[in-house]
Each structure stands twice: as C-alpha cells, then as structure tokens.
Length: 433
Image (tube, rainbow, N blue to C red; front, top):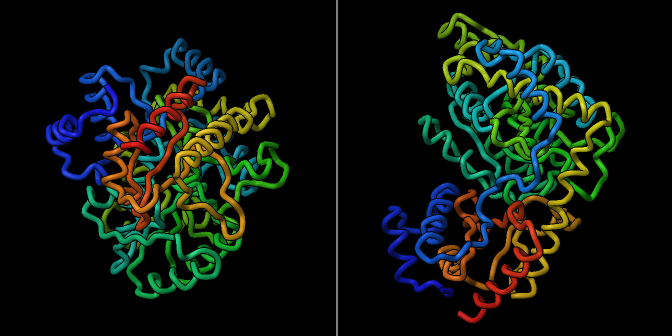
C-alpha cells in the first residue's frame, strides 16, 4: 500500500492531535507509526526512536535474577545507592573516563531522564537570580521538555556555527548575564553525533568556573566515538569530559545504551566531590540540608521515586565490574551501531540525502547510534510527511532544538539485510513522489 495516500496520513495525524509532524515528540511519532502500520498492514522502517538494537548484557540479567531470587524485591533500596554499585561505578569511571569520583558522590537514578529532571530542578533553586538552564542544541528532545514541565526558564542555542573558540564567545554571551544556573549537553551528541573536542570541553569548564555555572554532562553514549579505541580499561585514550576542566559538574551515565539495559531504567549520576559537598544557604533554608549532594539524594530523588530499582542496581553493579575487569567489552558490543550507521548513510546519500552535522571541527563525524540527514531544500514538515508516505518514520531536527533542516536518523532498529533493502526501496519511492 505504498505510497500511503496523503489523506490517510493527515487523518491519523489529526486523530493524534498533531498539527505539524516536525514538532511531534518521539513518543508521538511512535504512536503515529503504530497506527499507520495497523491501518495499512505495512511494517514501517523505524528511524525515530533510540531503542537498543543489541541484546541486553547477560551478566546484568543473571545478577538481577540472583538478587530477585535472594528476596531483594521485598526490600526498599538505600536511596543513596547499593554500596557495591557505588564502588564498582567509581572504578568504572576511573577505567573509562580517567577521573576520580568517590563512591559517595555516585548515585543511582531511574534512568538518565530522572537524573536530568532532578538535576535541572535542583540547579534552578540553588542561588537567587540563577534561574535559567542553558541547553547546547541539537539535543535529546525530552531534555528540552523537562524545564517546561517544571516551569523553569530555559534557553538554547544551536552549536552548528559555534565550534572551537567561537563556543567561548557564545557561552560568555549567555553566562555573563548572571542568570544561568546550569548548562546541559550530550557528548557524543544526540542527535547529531558530533563529539565536543577537548578544546571545547576546556572552554565549557573554564566558563563554568568563571561564572559559577554547573555543567550537566550526559554520557548516554559513553565511549561510542569509534574514531578512537576507547575500549581498554585504565588505558588512554579515555572518554572526553568536562570534568578535567572544572569542579562544577555532574555526569550522567546510563545503562540503556552502553549495556543495552534500557528496560530496567537505571543510570548513575557522578557528582564532583567539591560540588557534592558545597553548601547552599537556599537549600538549607528550604530543606534543612545544605549540601548539593545530600539534597540531590534526600530531597529531590526521595520525592521523585524514593530510590532506584533494587534488583537493577545489582545488575548495573555486575556490568560495571565485568567491564572494569576486562570480562565484558561493552564498546566492542555497541560498535555494531557504527556498521549500521555507515551502511544506512550510504543508502541515504545514494538517494540524494546529505549529512547536516557532518564535522567535528576538521574531522568527519564518527559513525554511531545517530546521525542527521537533510534532503535538498525540503523543510522538516514536508520531508517527514513524504518519508511517512513511503513507510519511514523519523523526527525533525527542529524538535531537538536545531535551526537546521533535516531529520535525526537512529540506526538501532535496522537489524537485518532485509531492513536495509527495504530502506533502499522506500527511499527510491520517496525520490519519485
């Protein structure tokens, strides 16, 4: 039934209360694709959602099963985290990021989504006048919705034109106003897969220290810059991080992609020792606790979920330990995404698409979990609707805070030769619409 008649697409979008598909959320797009699959009988080529396309780490599964068999499900977790998880996480961070984080400063959360949500909330309440969160875009679209849901002021800028030293001028422009409480970005970047260089991370760190801004660094795709071998524990090169250049940071590390453990919703927040201990009078006045770290745990996380899945903490602890001990090469596992990225990108380019965010300064971006693609001069709405008519779903770059024309391509659900052949066939149909 391809191409799908435009009136059918329009009707499904209307029923879903979506006036412009380029502004739809990832989950809205998922729902539209599911409805169109049901109505047309066509299985869509799904490029819109970052579901892991690799089996979950078996070491974690076995550790979680054992914990459940031992009766852990009936016991509330310690809200600050399982002691062995905190110890193993500290070793993991040292092994793959090359920085020292005390176990006390590592806290499990219900995925990085919960981590970012509560970090943004806390940072917005630390100091009078510092009430705005700055996002480097493009970025994970749900991150941009979090401050809106919380009623927190937020601003964004597209990094496309602000690489290298130009980034300093842009940050100075915002930070010097005195209202920025925190800055959030992902590295490697979702959706562009650009990777901030050490020079750029140093700029962010120096500006954060100068203007007392907290850096929230999302490492959902840890060690997935496949241009360098980051797979060997305790051996450089390490994952690049702002932590080398400032003490004002909290790093988010999720099990969802690095261990394909998305279904159990677990991550960790690594807070610098200095920030963890820092006293904020506004927090003490409001909650009778002064330190950033104690409040993150005992106030914000406690109110949000009263802790993180007990059994999943055992799983994550075991996976961290296996990676540190060299028993599980998680980087080798996820490198499959680079293969899929290269193959799918070649198919898109064959049919007239081009990379939008194509460079890290002077290097071509790494192949990985995501990339961005545009088609001639089509705007995002028309591009997405035409792709949908051909049985392909993606999200528009404008939904990620980008000012560029194009889509985010996620390769995780391109699993078989048939999937790539179908992508090729559908893009040929797209060209002729």
